[in-house]
Image 1 (tube, rainbow, N blue to C red):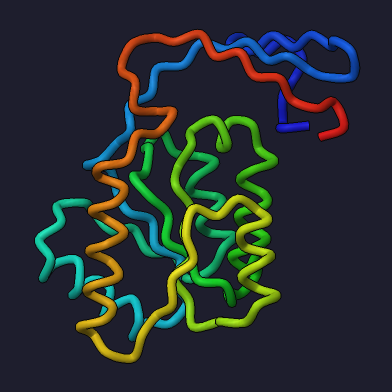
Image 2: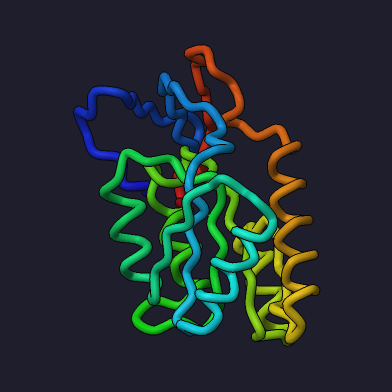
Length: 183
């Protein structure tokens, strides 16, 4: 159930009609200058992505992980709010789909509303359906041409730089969420 522990300082949970209402006060801004977390196990692809971001002059720090478990450990234990997460599907230890699911089920990670996008060579209908069923914010194919990868990264970054997200608001907001108690 979202990892909510009884007695947590910031969270009050009250059951109502089969639902759990969570009241929480948050202070988050969409960290558009925050790091881009890239989960990619292929060292060559990591280097290509690093070069693409440099060529496109995005100032965001890039934080690479070669498996989903390392990324989950970082996201769970850091105070840093990443701008976006770009994840491969096929990863050792914890694949991209499993990682997305764990992020959604962890209340403290889910409430950060970090855009989660797939950048992968794994293209088949089943995988795309699984990704969007897990509320992926995008599914992009790693093309063979660097110029195409540049176009994809530029489109992703421009979109999210312009996009409003729940964590765009700088003032303290009271967040009232109603979550089915079966979660």
